[in-house]
Image 1: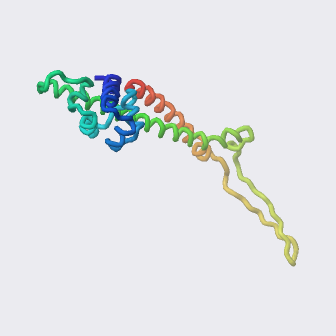
Image 2: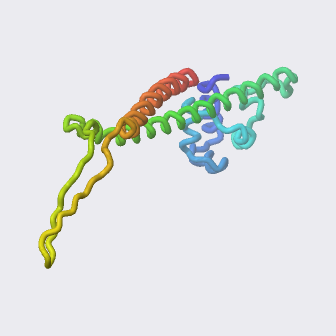
Image 3: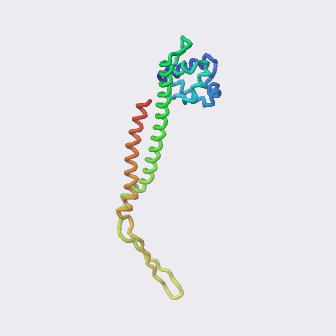
Length: 193
């Protein structure tokens, strides 16, 4: 059984029962979008929903999993095992695809965060924002009753090699790794679909 055969069978049974997608979804406590995904072969119901779905559509669980009506009232043990194994495999495949898609979106979010982190580095690279080194000092003079007082303020060296690595190196490496992983996950998603 493939998703298209299964989806077509569900749509046929639903129409025979005179149910809309919304009415069937309400019987199963799912959304009408879920029923639409099943019927258009873009998804597969959770294993827990197979028995209630079969009851709602007026067929046996085995008929539902095989995607066709049975001529005989009984099945052999081998046929029942094959139907159950096939349904479980289909459900596992759909679940794996969903988790891969979720992981790809997570990787995309990390890539976006790295780009936002690196944006100042790229914008100010021409102004030596990252590569200025040495001590910076500023003189300030304030006045008092006995005359001006000079205050020298010094700060630590700015943008050392460690600073540059933290500001640009780590996010850049993370960005590259996430892009590579996202591409690999996307390819796996296409194989599962």
